[in-house]
Image (cartoon, rainbow, N blue to C red; front, side):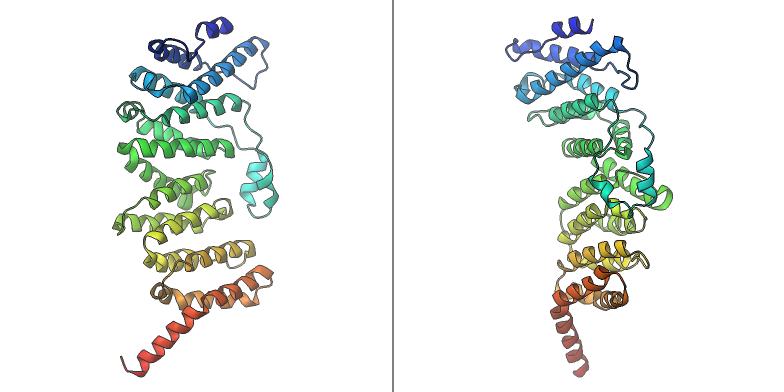
Length: 365
């Protein structure tokens, strides 16, 4: 049945162009069939192979096709989005033992980051569906009028749920899809930002368990890079109330590079935010006993200070150098040596600031 169905739906670029939309719709519908990859039923083997071949054919077609032949048909949008939702929106598999161990002890197994993910059995189909949907969203003359009709708030909520999967490959795919939707469907931008903020708040103040915080921070950072200056009060508030508290969770090592990237995007828009970043973020949540976390904070502190003007540096100079001085007695080599390197870099700022303060005091100003 599946092989017969596939031959009937076989799609070629030399097929008359007016037939492309309906052929593509039929193939989308055919690929909405879901197979159980945990069950080695020989009667399903032909269907699995036929679906794999059909998905590859769709992907190749979207890569090579003249977009105008399909992007003007609303039914194509409905069928493609239905294909994505049917295959991708599903109950996530329970976390593996390795994932649970890594979550409990995020600093004790650095080698696990280099291990390959053990993917869920259905990934060969899921990966192709992600690829197809991303290629569809990337078509040059895609109609946002049709996209916003079928991609609604419920779709976004379901997509955000997939960010909690423990599989990095799927989180990377979901990240690209969400970012593409953000750029294409303007009407959903506020909702997407708000839902990411809600996810950050829930993670910090409730569960402290969500696998996709790093990927969401990457998207949020790219959104911040597009902000107009001067920043709006609500944008600054999101930094202070949602982004900086992400320094608190014990699992920060799993997303710290993305957190630093996001903060740097804010500082590139307004370096005066340094006082909030340092006082309400880095120094407030500075680890007292964990050396590995302290090294991360030192690296982030240096990266943020490098963006500071002399005036910005003056607002944080005293608490920063007090914190750095406290590291001299630490038994961890990097925690002890990193402050020295930071001192060397920013000593000129400190001397100029102190000299100006002394001069001002001597004049009685």
